[in-house]
Amino acid sequence: MVTFLAGGTGTPKLLDGADEVFDLEETTVVANTGDDVELGGHFVCPDVDTVLFHGGGILDTDTWWGIEDDTTATHEELSRLAAAAGLADGPRYLSEEAQTAGRDIAAWRRFSGVAEFMQIGDRDRAVHVTRTSLLDEGHSLTAITRTLADAFDLEIDLLPMSDDPVATMIHTDEGEMHFQEYWVHRRADPEVRDVEFRGADAASPTPAVLDALSEPVVIGPSNPVTSLGPMLAMDAFADALAATPVVAVSPFVEREVFSGPAAELMAGVGRDPSTAGVAAAYPFADAFVLDEADGTELDRPTVRTDTRIDGPADAARVAGAVETALAAAGATDW
Image 1: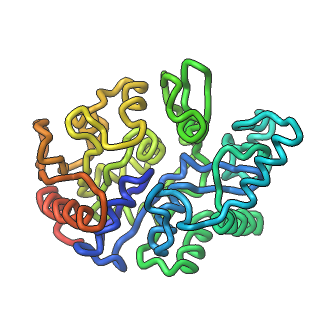
Image 2 (image 1 turned 30 degrees about the horizontal axis):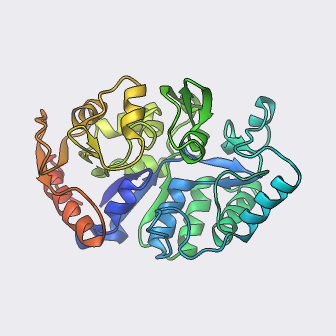
């Protein structure tokens, strides 16, 4: 058995070819929930849903977000209504008082649905309506995620990192904003000064997650700050990683990042935006997979391959390197 930690697009891309190496029925994916938002009353779990839609064979792999060929009639009508009514465009973060009202899991990440700033497809929205309704019925996010996974016929076991709220807040030169506002609406334009994982001190991984972390763990080429940071901010999660074999795939080739705002975010929290910086951020990692063009020397076992992932064949190649690195990390059964 093996457990993948997923955030952003890095790990889902790796999973695109993981079935060539790993038995998916014996594989667990723990997804970041720090990026989650409540938008117009609907609870959206972007990193969970990327894995959910990928496993269900419906993910839009041009954007690695949403459902392929989804329509956007509701989103477009929301935009039209806001414009016709003269309502301000862009993210409309609810008041501080509203952030801790209502369902606990949505604390500190509540946005109005007016002038919806994240494009959500119509079929995609049905998933959020179902998830939110089940939350309101009293089900946990873990139980709901497994229910949705069954609906999409996933082979893997998909788990949210916690049933407690952890909100990734970016502190910038223009003020504090939720990660989704920083990345989706502002396209990582403001200068990052710090990153806060609000609620992490009171959050904990579920028993199912801790059980999954007792198996060898693979961290794909995800953003160390906003994809893994919310998980590591929970002490029990970090402690579990220190006690099990862990392999990490670097999202950098020396100082060049493959995609996303990892470099800006790492610099903003005082880490070197590089492969060496990733290794420093992952002291619990027992081995690394680096690109063959990456000359970084690490103090732990290193396996090199072409780590660029542009499709299933690339993913299978990197997954093969991960398998070699797991053996180097001391993992004997996966």
